[in-house]
Each structure stands twice: as structure tokens, then as C-alpha cells.
Amino acid sequence: MTRRIIALLGRRDEPTDAVEEYCRYLATALGERGFEMSLVRVPWAERGWAAALHELAQQAVNWRGQSVCVQYTALAWSARGFPLRFLSVIKVLHRAGVRVVVVYHDATPYAGNRPVDKLRRAVQLNVMRQSLRRSDLAIFTLPLSAIRWLRRSTGNAAFIPVGANLPLAALTTEKPSESPRDVLRVAVFGITGGETGRNEAARIVEAVGFVASKIGKLELHAFGRHADDCESKLREGLRGLPVDVHVKGVLAAAEVAAELSSADVLLFVRGQISTRRGSAIAGIACGLPVIAERGAETLGPIEKAGVALVSGERPGEFGEALLRVLTDPQYRASLAESSRLAQSQYFSWQAIAASYVEELLKTR
Image (cartoon, rainbow, N blue to C red; front, side):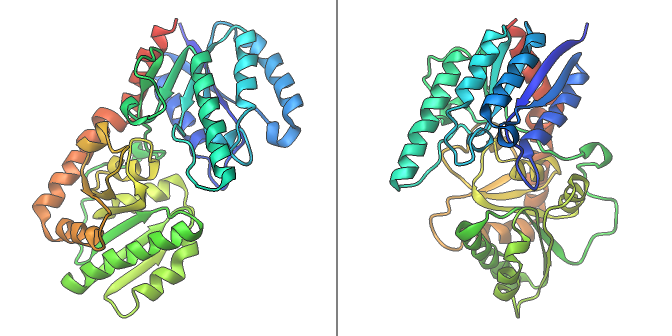
């Protein structure tokens, strides 16, 4: 018998919605295990909260007894990251008699030292704590030990990492069977916007420039969100060095998979790596060595992948790690193999779906 599940989403993210993609890939994998997952949005941003909650209540009448997986990020339920209305969504679902599963994609409150940042952080922590208490099951994309506000005695919490939102079935995680290239290729998938992105671009320039000055010609392929915003900074920073710079913006998932599968290493500069960083896990899924910064969230399966970790505390660490990966073929191959194994065991949608089924069946 097919078991039905609802994935409930808030406001759509633009230009791409990673949470919606997550749900679609998960739905496909769950379908292979006898679960039918349907995606439903709460259109509060388009229609206002009163109308959206009324519509949700009408829909939820037909979901009694089913599991509704409510996808939480702060900005999905509030334009400015004050997601108080998220608790209203949970209340409507409880009244309808559904099993409430909250999936915390954003389990860490936002940083910042301004008064508004501190208020936002307090609101987010309050919402996450209350929604956890009101849920039948809470799924976190980080190991539970990495979530500071979570009590160890919480019995309804489970950890399931995210997977790569990529169509990997058409690809192989082994390197293409083409003749070896003379030029090694460094991939960068996504850069943060604003001032943070400019700092990340500077880190890319420093690392790639350092390696190019040591070993000669390289290719840098930067793509994804805000990569094209940083194109001039990347080109200017690497001017005069033997680096072919290729920059693209947001790509279709198949193009992302092709770019990553054609690279020799993924340079991940968007903060500390963890099991919730989908752009880093995309590199792992494509069988790449990944160079990334270690942090408080760098726990669990991510440590078993082919990740060369740096502390990020002193200049040059990314460059030194990149130099070793690109100049030591055996080390590079070992990291790539570790990524392939981690993908199979932890980050594939089949493994993620198996974990979901195990946890969902506990709540019946």
C-alpha cells in the first residue's frame, strides 16, 4: 500500500529554490520505497497570512493521519527572518490531526551584533524551540551534537544530511573516459553575495594564484549563485598568471553536474563545511576532492568524505591545501574515492530516503 506524505513549503526562494529541489529529489527516492510525497506551498507572500492559513486549514482536512513534513528556513516563513507565523502553520496542522514533521534546514540562528540582529536571533531560537516541542518528529540536517540550543534529552529529533540537488543518474562519479587533460581544473560552485562574496573571491584568487605560480597553467571554473557578480574581481586578481578563468552564473542542475564531474577539485569557500551545505555536498556527490574550512558544524559523515580541511585562521591555508591536492595524484585519488564512498553511504538520495522511512515509521 502506498503511504502518502506532504512536503509543506513556505515562500519560494529565487532564482533557485534549494529546499524545493531537495523535496523533489527526496520524493523520487521515497517513491521507490512505497511512499508518495506531494509538494504543497503556503502562499503567504502572495496572498497574505490570513488567506494562506485559511487555505491551509481547508487542505489539511484531507491529510488527517498523514505525515506533513514542514520545511523550515527562517526566510521561507518571513521576509526579514522573523518567522513567528511558522508556529501558526504548526497549529493549523495539529488541529487537522496530521503527524507534524519539521525539517530544519536552518537550525542555526542568524549572526550579527546589531540590536535587530539580536532580536531576530531570539525570535528564531524561540520559534525553533517551540516548533520542536510541538512536532511529532524533527529532522535536522546537522548532527544533533552541533546544534547548541538543542537539549540532549530531546527524544523526537533525528539527523539526516542533505543530498546533492543534481541529476546524477545520467552521470558516473568516476572520471570521464576521455584522455587526461594537460591542464588541471578547479571548480567553485557558488559564492555568497555582497561583501562576504567579495572576501570569498579574494580567497579564491589567493589560493588559485598561489598554485598557478608554483605549477603553471590552471583552469578556474566558477559558476552558480553570485559567481558572475564576482567575475571582474576574479579576472583582475588572476591577471598575468597562467590561469584560464571561466565564469558562469546560475546553471541548470544537469550543467552543474557536468561542470563538477569535469573538474579535478572543488574549492569550497562559502564558510565552514557541514552536512547541510548542499553546494559542498554536490562536489562529494560527483566524486571530487573538496577543500573547505573546518568549523563547529564539521561533524559526522562530512568527516568521512574526501575533504581536505583547513582551519582558515591564517592566510595561505587554502592555497597550500589546493597545491597538495593538485600535485599529488595519489592523494587526489584517495580523496575522490572517499567522496564516492561517502556519497553512496550517507549523501545519496537512496540513503537519505532510507533514513526518512526509518524515522517516519517510528511516528506511526
